[in-house]
Length: 195
Image (cartoon, rainbow, N blue to C red):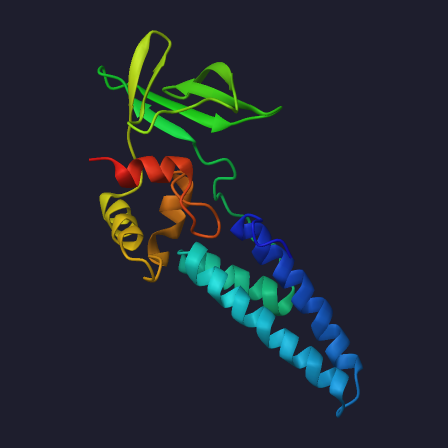
């Protein structure tokens, strides 16, 4: 299973693989190496599932729906986790918001206050100081994640071997600051290094 798949896709994939293996496990004899091997793999899937659930699904009702889906084959839960986090979010001096989000055909969609105004090549270079000039305006990069999440990310990045602040994973991912493996994105590096 690709570990760079979006977290919700990983949950769906693990659930399908778990149920398939569980059926194989039931068909095996009571004693035997194959049954033990499958049992070990089932335990690995359960652990991976629980870890993903803890990191990416914060709502208790949604977690229950995922458990129902995973163990009993209930309906596939839906989730609104952003699939295209922004590569840039900026504010103008007047307070308008500009977002640059990956779009189709190797281009990025540029929106101002929620209205698409342009497309730009995905090779757009954003300076480390986090200001771009678009539509005859300067846009200063801002983070939309809670300040506690950004501060936790900065602290994590300052220590070489600390534990990622998983409680903030969803907010940081949706703001485009981290990838699905908790690696900093280019936007994340700009925000973390901002004064």
